[in-house]
Length: 108
Image 1 (spheres, helix red, strand yellow):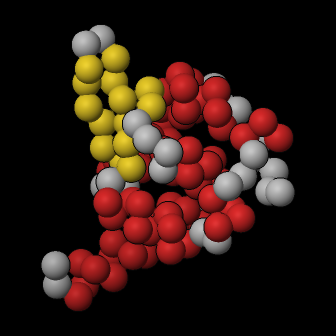
Image 2 (cartoon, rainbow, N blue to C red):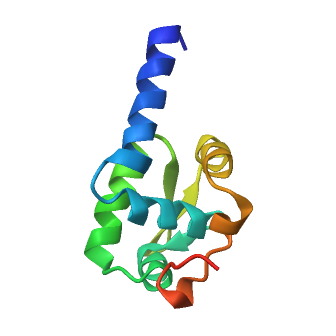
C-alpha cells in the first residue's frame, strides 16, 4: 500500500468511527464482534439496535475491511478482521472495550 492509499484508508476509518453519524453504533458493533463471530440478530440484541440498522452499519464496516461475513447454512455470520481488531484495540481503552451491553452501552 502506497502512502496516499494508507492516508486515505486511515482518514476513512477515522471518519467512520469518530466523525460520521452512526459512529457510536459502529464502535459498539466492533467491540461486540471482538468476542467472536455473530449473526446480525445477535449483534442487534447485544448493542440495542434494530436488525436493519445493524445491517447498514455492517455494510459500512465491511466496505472498509474492518468486518467480514461468511455464510453457514442459511445464516450469515460477521467477524472482525485482523485490521479491524487492531484498529479497535488501538482506538479504545480497556474500559471502553468492556462496556456493559445490558446498560445500553454506557461505560462502567
